[in-house]
Picture 1 (cartoon, helix red, strand yellow):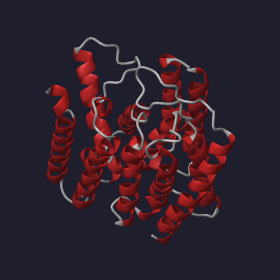
Picture 2 (spheres, rainbow, N blue to C red):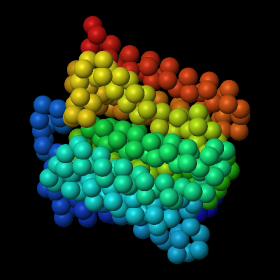
Picture 3 (cartoon, rainbow, N blue to C red):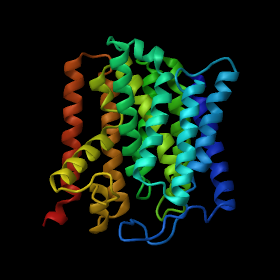
Length: 331
């Protein structure tokens, strides 16, 4: 437990320092230009990933070298997958790889990451091949959903950072194992530091170099919860992005849109563009994520029925928040 707290504090401090240095040196790197899909009014550098992902990787290596490796997250295969997505994101931020090459590299990274999940998947009580396939699909899905949600000030903090907090807390309760705690704590500390440059008006965004690797990290956390608690309970960790992503994909599919093409039809995007203040949108998002996280903590030791009830309650809360945010649009 002490390691988890120390990891949080140190990662926060290192994150602040790295963001300051990288923003000073690369203030024009891969700026998110203003266009018809933008949720910001000026070009904004996408350097969050450049600053924060290396710290996560180095922290996991440090635990390994200290003789206290973090299961999954300190595995060389998993770290290689994180670096594959970091490189993919840097290239995409600079030259735009296109949907299919980018997806292919995500598949590669997810496949590599699954090799690090072997011991965790053994606890899933399913044939290993089936567990590995499900884990692969979950990783790819959450990588993509994380990438979709880095489009508004503090949105990445609310949807990727908040789950890291609850993963660390879940580990500290012993529900998934104390050894996992520092991974969540490092992620949470880095996103707390990211608030310093991502709060409105944002000085920087994560960029693909951040949203892709941290999406993989969140995906791995979700798989751990699925195997150590239950697959149903695991839906609570990334609850907001799952609800938003599923409903948005269904909505676009029914309208005959290509779901691989860039768009701006997520609830948070539509609500912000019709006048909802950014902090109201983020507040609603973080509330849903935090409520789902507390529900996960409260029901982790309970039966599957409680997990299903918690997931249903989280979806109802998301739907209510979305309806409230979109109220003026429908009117």
